[in-house]
Length: 405
Ligand code: PMP
Image 1 (cartoon, rainbow, N blue to C red):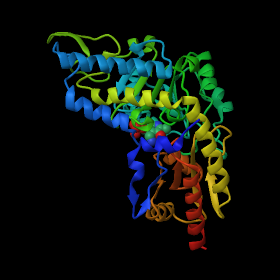
Image 2: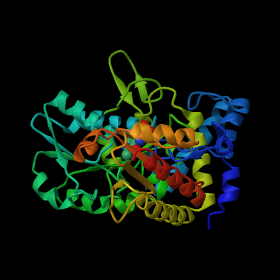
Image 3: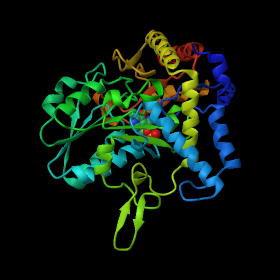
Image 4: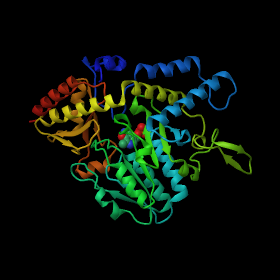
């Protein structure tokens, strides 16, 4: 059970007033708020323990290194990876995907090769692959989705051929909310010996992710969407693949020995962690994972499902409101347009009432193009949101709908 009244006490920002109204924060898919324990972890580390990791023999350095490696172990358990060496800290989902596109691409993608992504990808899971294709003279192929926002995986066989080098697909769409059948996609890809990268930025905040069960080759997510600080994220990769890939960046920590003639690289995962990483925020990511585990992942899933069902039902009843994304399996977000009212107008009027939603391309222009739109409004929910907040959102949407008769 989620005790939302007590949970909200952990997120002091939720007490903020916006133009005199209580903040209703429905922009969680862009970034989630931070509980006090995460803020405290960061503040305490800077106050009492800050020292660069891995390089010092002194007390504080060793202490930070230990906490950093403990955080890696927490991440490993959180996504059920087999080995700690398969967990690489990055700056976020974008950093993780760029790492794979560059490093895997360098090793395995050549002229004439093909990469498959889906039509519902965030720009972060399109542009790094386009950049790679430009460098290597390779091409991108697209798995389309239908008008309900369901991926046409029935077309996968016709898209795959002997030149396909990797499939990169989102676990959950940041616009449609669709939870994709990634397990099935991975099984299909593996039957052709093709590895799969899963963008988990929107899936990890809302559910249990088990990379062993999925059997994915790469899995990526961002700390800031799961109540951790910004600037820290995770790349999971199967050891066998990561070992065959060259380092993404060169610098301190990722080396074994350096001479001007020849450099040898560190073992995994440090091979992919060049320079001074964001170790304080990595430790705070561990604190965020503790918070999620304490709240209960099953409790979170159940409560957010109820929020989504309630929001979908109430929002559908607003005259002239159209929801984009009607898949059976969705994470707790609703993208919509109200009549032919511009998305920015809706967003700005809601803002004046203290309601924070996202507007615009939602970093998924090809997805919006599918519907012939240049922008949408998105309300996204997590376990500190309430049913009352959804009521207030809908009351305001009704008023906006009437305003633009
Ligand atoms: N993929 C998806 C599906 C996302 O929703 C986001 C963030 N909106 C990203 C990738 C990029 O995440 P970040 O900006 O944290 O790197």
